Image (cartoon, rainbow, N blue to C red; front, side, top):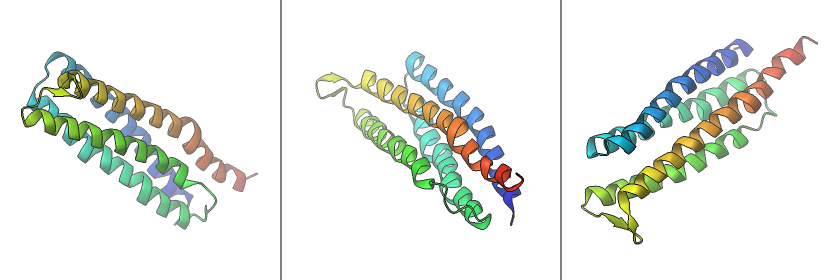
Length: 151
């Protein structure tokens, strides 16, 4: 396996970033304008299915491709750290949504709906920041390994 596989994965991930960012922004708007259990369920499934699948590709497929290309000194843990932060926010979001579905309308003395929207905004912003970090720092850092081989 060559460095080409690494490039293919990075291209795929970058394309997914565009799609995921559009969807997260749409969900943010929906939560603000049409707050409902249906929108909450879409937001949960977005996090649990689409963002998780994307993270899995980065953590497993990319790491595997890097190993096979002989790139062993790239710090995959630094990239994965952003995923842990997103996981923590996602867990809190899910916790709040479950409270809402049980009929609760307050959380720690605050309006639960506002807390849910605020937490999803935090998730969305963290996701945007994470993708920016990947595209401007991590991915170019990985690609430089290919350039160094031809210098």
